[in-house]
Amino acid sequence: MTELWVQRTGTRRYTGHSSRGAEVLVGSEDVDGVFTPGELLKIAVAACSGMASDFTLSRRLGDDYDTTIRVSGPADRDNERYPVIDEVMELDLSELDPDAAQRLLTVVQRAVDKHCTVGRTIKAGADVNLTIATD
Image 1 (cartoon, one colour):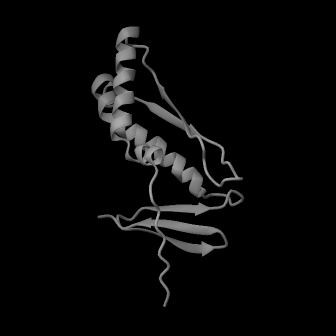
Image 2 (cartoon, rainbow, N blue to C red):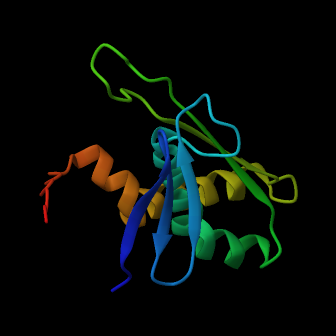
């Protein structure tokens, strides 16, 4: 299993690490060159939707199909949560007839609903358990 951790690198600045060698810079919105935790959450949702639909789309549109998934959702600062996360998957389906395009979109939606672990977790809710280890 991949190990994940964040390490503090400055005031409200962290670097996220994976045991596979990946890194991501995390910090507050007023720091250049970093993602906020909320932005990473939204990116995770969009990337998960893309990955969940990749096989279906590449099978129908070819391995070199292009897509961009835009994701947004303002924070509710009174409750410190994101009440809505909106995704827009941009696809060029102009080569398909309207019925085939609609069938593909239905299959894509089903694939995302079934296989996007991040989206499914957010929709269902998850327990988050914090343990504080001290020396």
